[in-house]
Length: 186
Image (cartoon, rainbow, N blue to C red; front, side, top):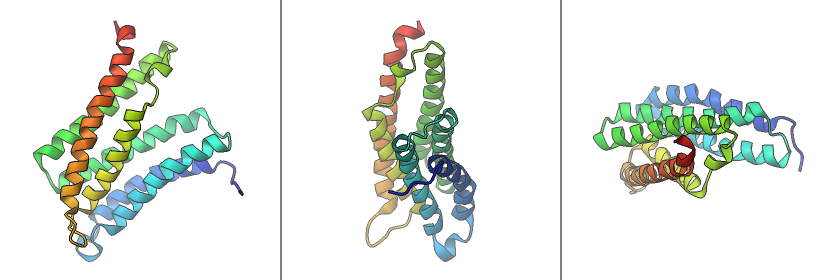
């Protein structure tokens, strides 16, 4: 398979550029095209999230900058989506889910930084529950971006259920990482 040097880093940077593009498309002419353009940009960001990590590992292109930018791009996109969706449909359950997701990201980032300073970063390495949380969150946000019923499917309600599942997994993953690091935090 033909590879392009530095493609993983280019995908990560592209995901960062997609954030303002997503926000712009979410708000521009929703009555004409609906939320399709914003949803497509978000879907591309999710796909590049998978492929940049895969390519970096496969092509042995991992770098400290890439390891830093990849989670930053993910967290910024998730926060941007949650904020614009919440602003467009201010509902109490979504506010709570937004606070849980963003709060967890801040907490885990700080916890990982602390553990890295103690040379114990592997204590809070990504786990399966974190991957399940991310998957549920990605799908939930896609449904919440689109919002309108599609082909008879209640898209907003499907997004609600998935977001609530993602919020529960978010709390569980935060608890798991915190419990693993607890002995070192005392």
